[in-house]
Image (cartoon, rainbow, N blue to C red; front, top):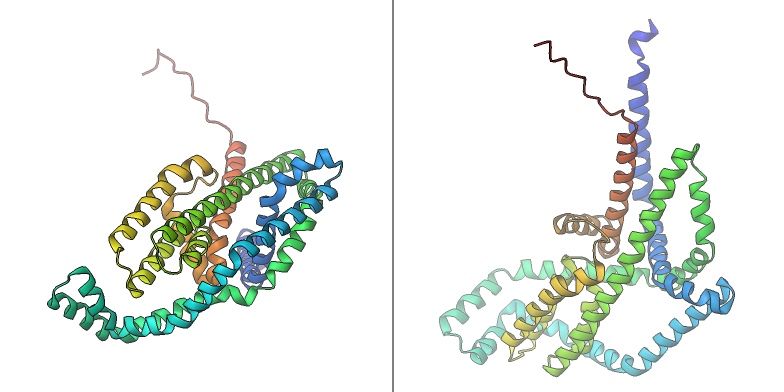
Length: 360
């Protein structure tokens, strides 16, 4: 009688689905803590090559980690003393003038000045001004939402202290943690699978983080230098901002370019065509020259999948979610690839039956 209401196979499926749902609920509930640890892992991968390089000459991993941290602090302090005052002045000036710039944009007041500078006809100026005035509420709401999204990381400013501390433990005990994870396998086959997953993730994250940092530094330096030479307002703010957005694949660079162009328009910058050509040329150089050479095939994820991951990550975790979305997707891809290849290897190959020529 009990077998009519209780099927062991159905029970296993329901139990597996329940465990999967509970895991997703836990990951969503603890997303901020998990994101903090993920950033710590990424930072550890950033400094790991330098630690490995200094470990042998300094005769100790702890000494190498301490020297690397001291060097990083010295570089940050030097950067702050050299460029920090300029960035602070431009940030203060932009914060003071931004409300008036947004008011001019939403009211359409700047259209007349911009049209006069670039020789627009009165009818075109009137069309643009009417469009901005009619969509003023929508533009204000979108601007407010964008500002809230960009301000979210400020609430996690204390992470700047926790991330290096957590990375210190990861750098110190990383090999032990990896060995413990490999030992979770119940048999040699499972241990080999875990070892392969850990090796793939280690290789992917290491190459991805180093490549992203190099690309971000190239964008930051190029934007800052070129925009300064072109006398674009707030170049020392827009350059580092573009470098930060470089960490968000595909979507981030587009947002940075649009932000630079909008700031230039609102401040009545006269050489908009030259600025547009620079933004487009740099994107082509970065995407088709620098990125393939520096990043190689560390991700093996299509641009469409990266866009989906960034948008989904931004919807779930805001700016922080967008930053960590692509590495998370790459890790899931490695897990899927390893586990499915392991399962397919367990399926016996189908042998072809010998053909008897005497039978039709």
